Image (cartoon, rainbow over all chains, first blue to last red; front, side, top):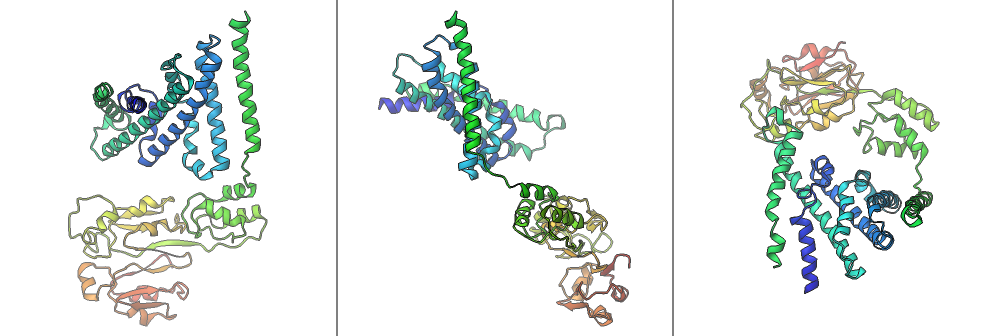
Length: 206
Length: 264
C-alpha cells in the first residue's frame, strides 16, 4: 500500500504538478518545433521517454558509485552530458541494426534529443531528489519511475499542444501575430492552466 | 593533489575514451550494408515521387531498377534520366514515350456559369462533394485549382475558371490527373494534337442548356473522321490516340467547338 502510494506520488508529480515542459520549462525546443502534427508529436515523445529512461538507468549508478563517494559532485554536468550523448548514438546504432522499422519511425528524432535539456534535466533532478540514506535499489527504482513520469508528462504536453495548434491554424490570427508569436502566447496560456494542478499531489495524498 | 585535480581529469578522460571505444566497436559490429548501386541510381531519378512509372515513388523505382526493371519508365525524367540510369546500370538506353496532360473540360466563364455562390472550403474536392459542385454542368471543372497545387512543374493553371495545361512545361507525370475529383484530366501521348474538351455524358439537349462548348453527341465528327479514330459513346466523343492522324477534320465539323487542337 505504501509502495503503491509512493509510486502514484512520484508519477503524478512528474506528469501533472511539475510538468517538465509547462512547469519547469525544459525541452521547449522540440515542444515548439515538433508539435505541429499529432503523429510527429507522438513519435517525438515516444523517443524522449525511451532516451530519458535509459539515460537515468546509466547515469544514476555512475553518480552514486563513481562521483559521490569521491567528492566529485561538481563533475555531474560534464560526465552526464558525455554519457548521454554516447548513449543516444549507441541506441541509434542498435535500432538501425536490429529494429529498422522502429528506426525509420523514431530515428529522425534521436539526434534532436541528444542534448535536449529535458533529458539532462531529468538525470540531474534524479540526483537532487536522491536520499543517500535509502537503499540503492529503492532509490534507483524511484529515479526510473520519475523519468518515466517525466517522459509521460512530456508526451501529455506535446499532444495537448498539438491539438491547440491545429485549432490555431484554422483561426483568423492578426497578421503581426501569425506563426511563432501566437504559438508562444498559446503555450504560455496552457502553462498557466497547468498551474491549476499545483496542489493535486498534496491534496490527494494527505 | 591527486585526489583533488588529477583524479577528476583522469576520470573524465577515461570515461570519454571508454565511451568512444564502445561506439567504434559498436559501429563496426552493427554496420548496416548500404547498396552503392541503389544510391547511384536513386541520385539520377528526379525525386518527384509521382508514381507514373507504376512504383510507389522514386525510392521504390530505384530499388526495382537495381533488380533489372526497364529504364524508360520515368515520364517526368524523360530521355535524359533514362540515359543516365542506363549508364549507371550498364544497360542499353531505351526511348521514353513522352506524354502530356489535357483537361477534358472547356467550360470557362464564356461557355457556362455557376448555379450557386459557394462559400465553403475552397478546394475542388470539397466543392464536388456539395451537390456535385457549383457548375451548371455536373461534370464541369470547378476551378479551385487542386490540380494546380499538385503540379510540381508549374504546367497547369486556372484561366477564366477552368484548368488549362501549358504543353511546353507539362511532363506527363499524372499527378494532376490523380487530384481532379471529376477525373477531367487525361494523359495522352505527346504526338496527339487533337482532343475532346468535354466529359459530359448528359443528353445533347441537356448539355446545350448548361454549356455552350459541351459535346452534344451529334456524331458529325465520327462520320467525318477518315481514320475512324473518333467514336461517340453515351453522348460523348472520344479520340483514340493510336488511330488519330492529327488531320483536324473533326475540329472543323464540331458544331459546338468541343473538339480542340494544339497547332496542327
